[in-house]
Image (cartoon, rainbow, N blue to C red; front, side, top):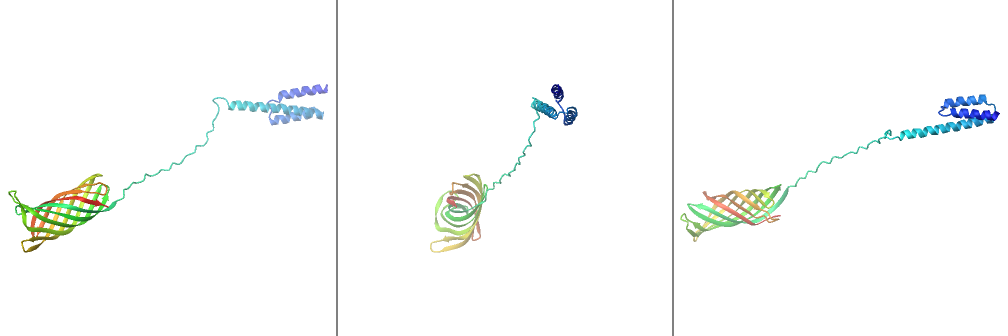
Amino acid sequence: MKRISSLLFILAFSTQAFGLSLEEYNTQVDKINSTIKDEQMRLLIKQELAKEIAKSLSKQKVDIKEVEEAPGEKVEQESPKTVESTQVVAPELLIEKDNFKVQLGISAIASTLDFYGASLNLIGNELSISGVKKVDNHKFRLGLGIRSLKADTITLENGVEYDILKKVDYSGAGVNLSYTYMVRSGFGVGAYMAFNYGETDLCEVDYCYNLDTTISDLGARFDFNLAAWNPYLTIGYSLYNIDGHEFDAATAYLGLLNFEF
């Protein structure tokens, strides 16, 4: 009879064990200790009570897990975003370095001088060496030249051309300055100026006169560029001062043998 009453007591406690808190569990334990005198029976009831509480806790965990995984109620924890630092790289300034070259050339010269109403035709050549400074499409030249000219014919006002009976030769040296803007890589236009000082030899049959002479040139320049070969053509005005007498002239230079290094 005592065992049956004990089992009924266990059943009654097991039905109340669901959802017990820790404080309620301690209260039930005190009640068991005061009600049941048999130590083995008290131990048995406590074990059964502990099992029921464990089942209750396990059931509560399952319910909580189902609630957490329910659709639409899951709270996603965002991981902290990693902010990537972007390094701003300034574009490199592409600056073309200024080029400095040396130009060496031989130019053919044709100059028509207005000689007291007639046209004195001078032909010759000039050997020049120049320094060339290039900045982008701009070319600047400064050079030295040795010039040699001679007159072979003279054209009178009526258009008749005669051979020169007297020897007319000029030789001298000077400086030249020119500028060219390269419109394209192979072609450019610009201007030039030059100043030469030397002597003109005017010779008769048995006697020669040495006359101090200066030549000033100014005109347009057309440049062509093919690798190191740089031919050019100039057309302009020249002023001859021969022993104090000034003569106007039209002069052209053709620099076929002209190279830059």
